Image: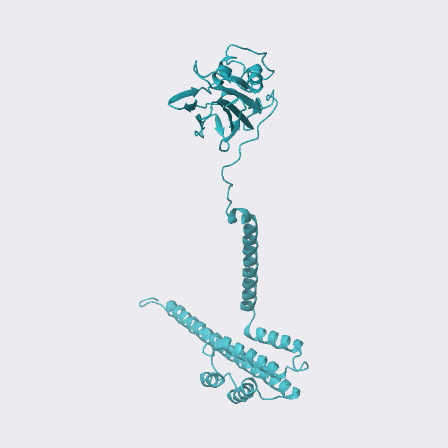
Length: 371
């Protein structure tokens, strides 16, 4: 337990204006005073070795702090003139009590001789309870004499910053050390899935329409398909709308599509002259009428020849007439082929019947030796 600093001793030092310094230091050696209301851990007298002429004391302001709050330790030492004091420092930054800034040292001369030197330590505590500040002894050098002033009794009381009863306080759940990074495809996969589903539905719908169109086109007879295209072209009324050249070109395309279905060699990639050469040996096609129609069509499509509305309708009518002529020849040829097949079949049946009748007659002749 540290001794309480005597107020009477300080009053005697200030009251005495003359006399021997050594007499002044020893005059109050055994005096005691009533202790102050400050706890003993925050204020006290530091007793140097016996026989010395050095007096010292300290005070902690404030005497009670919270964890991390700043406080000040003030150490006052009275020494003779010519004495030199070496103040200790707190260099350990991992201790329970650490220094916040460099130590401030001030001096004051006394009328009775000697001087007062005061050191102020700006500190902070990082634990709870009555903590020793942990300063080493201050060293006073007077000539060849070295004295040590102990500072180990300096303490500070540190209170906890927690509430008195923390049983009702529920801590927050721990947070992730790093925020979770979600890839973009995980955030947008529902939208991507919806787009993929729509794309599949569109593809199925288009495929179904294409299949239905192909089935319809295949089911139609080439001539029925050509008639359908001519009627559709007439409903467009391109000639009345000023698109007379386009009207003629589309009519000729209907003719070429029909011829390609009737003659496998008349493909659509052929030019007009090449088409005439390919179908030259086909007896069903009116060669002269087709040459004239193709020449007019090439002049309108490639040479941009101006055609009147009346002439455009005439060329469209001629195109349909060529298709009708080829279809009539096709039907006549098919009828002749069917008649020839029927005649051949009838002749085969007649020959077979004749052979059967001859065989029956032969089987009815009497055998040799019969009566």
